[in-house]
Image (cartoon, rainbow, N blue to C red; front, side, top):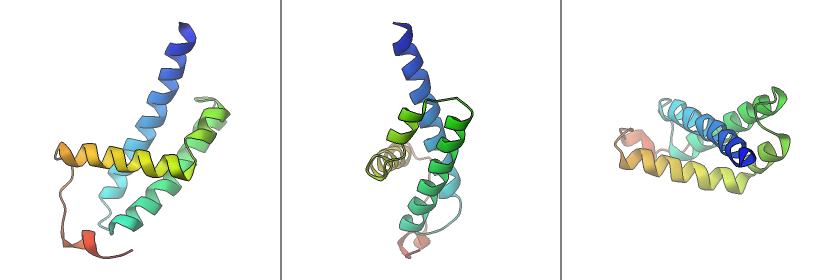
Length: 97
């Protein structure tokens, strides 16, 4: 049972990284694709640091830096935060990169 708690703690760390970076990228007033590219790069870097500092195991860091997983989770988090009204959108949202 302890291993399950540990795995959930690791996943909470990763989700905190994702959400933190997404929130920061939303504030930069770039178009959606540019924000997403920036978020992916920043998330990969923070996950790498978390692995280096032994906050999460390398196998989990590798999984959560796969582009397909990053894209899916970022879209899911942004959708949830949009639904909750955390982000305000402007005309710049529709301007590419």
